[in-house]
Image 1 (tube, helix red, strand yellow):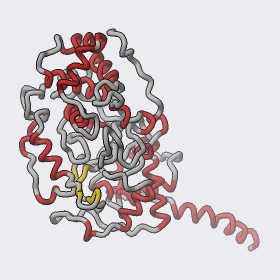
Image 2 (cartoon, rainbow, N blue to C red):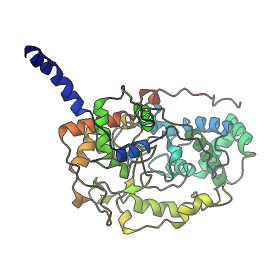
Image 3 (cartoon, rainbow, N blue to C red):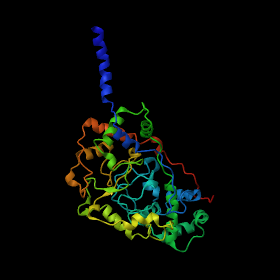
Image 4 (cartoon, rainbow, N blue to C red):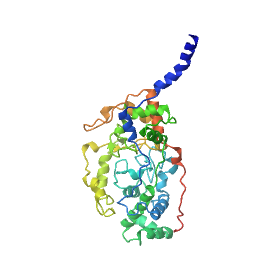
Length: 389
């Protein structure tokens, strides 16, 4: 009898631990497996004729870190997109030539996007490079400024000619080509495999992954189950790439509102650098179909892009306005969000999750398995801006 009691005493903690280990239903497993495999195959951008070309990537890297393409000669793309901060800047909102209203998004895996920017105001990586150049709050330059910077720097001009031929007299063409080179560089920025990917791959073939934390498994079960987070954050990149109202305030300051996707579509349609214009290198025009048909609707007001969840530990703070300082704050927001603050146009995707403290911790534990520290090391520049290789 005494032995039996002792056995029960020792087995009790084990039984409690086993009871906390989640089991996934076949439907949940299908959802989890749908978040891979990772990494996805590399593809070229048909709209950018120098996509994937080493010489263009080299020039793009140099221009990304150069301050010559800013109005005051002190700012570079890398000023706000810092490699060791997930190619973001760690600030609520950045300062360029003046204050900017939106949080700086990270650049890792950006090649997988269809729309670019919190409001989708660009439909290509090239366009997303040009937009902050032209914005008087950010880098504040013109096509004339960019073209002049390239013409007057012998090494940059040499690299440009190797890729695009003689420097054109049309400054807008020179600007577009410089942006295409930076886009080719940005396409190379990608995240590594994570603990989640190892767990996902093991689950896909019916194997166990004992290294994956139990708390993360419980959080993953919430992510694909009770939370239904994959409705917006699905696929290998953990984003549908579209836009939603998440219940975050649209007010920037008294009397000033950020209209989100509504304004982004208007900006996109008016831009000479969109895929409908002369700078799109896809002669078929197939990559411009979405741009041709996208139109503003009332529900677009206050919608913002669904970001990827990969490497999100490095890109604090969160949301389009940088208003949430930690992953726990993000989970708390979705746990308590009021549906009355969200316009859904008949599509009720956002609802309060009503998570317990333990469930919140578990969901954060899962989200952290989508990051690895190696993705945020200081960037080792590979090309000398003073030479023409």
